[in-house]
Amino acid sequence: MFIQVIQGQVGDAGEMRAALDRWHTELAPGVDGWLGTTAGVTDDGMFVNTARFESQEAARRNSERPEQGQWWAETQKLFSGEVTFHNCAEVYTYLKGGSDAAGFVQVMQGRIRDPRRMREITAQSERGMAAFRPDLIGGFAALHGDGGYTEVAYFTSEQAAREGEGKELPSEMRELFEQWKDLFEGEPTYFDLRDPWLYSSPRSA
Image (cartoon, rainbow, N blue to C red):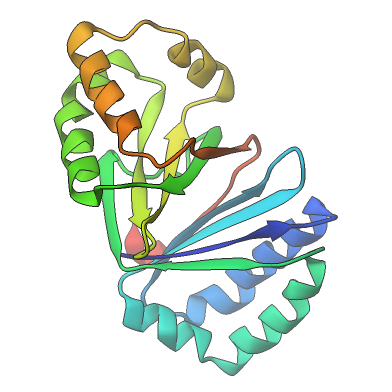
């Protein structure tokens, strides 16, 4: 899987949602290799979009389509500042991966010291996390290739996620969690998508 992350401040979440809806309706059926998109706008106006493709080549082909260029030329006007892109060739999923049934999505970004160890800890904690946090459906992590890291976690609801955050971790999971936190350079940044926009290709179902 290949992930493209696009983010930036927007002034009108409704206009951005309409633009994504139009892409899904008009452009997505012609995109070979597009798997799905998770997007949304935080309370303070940060738009975060993660588009999933079968491969980097599929993402490149989409970017080169004339209709994609026209759509982006119009859509980029909705941003109020700089737009950031991350192209992620290394991606891994955990638990059930993403889900269009999620009621709340949280995006986390930061810089990590050891991507391989991060992946190992995620795999080691999966079984325990599935039992301990039934509110967490699953998610994926995408490596930017320069030490940057974006993780997208899908929850049944925000209320359930907040209640789950407040639970005390069992000792063995707490140890893994501390190791996980130590891999970050500084504190990660969280983006809460309380109204996630979830799209999937019929071909990926």
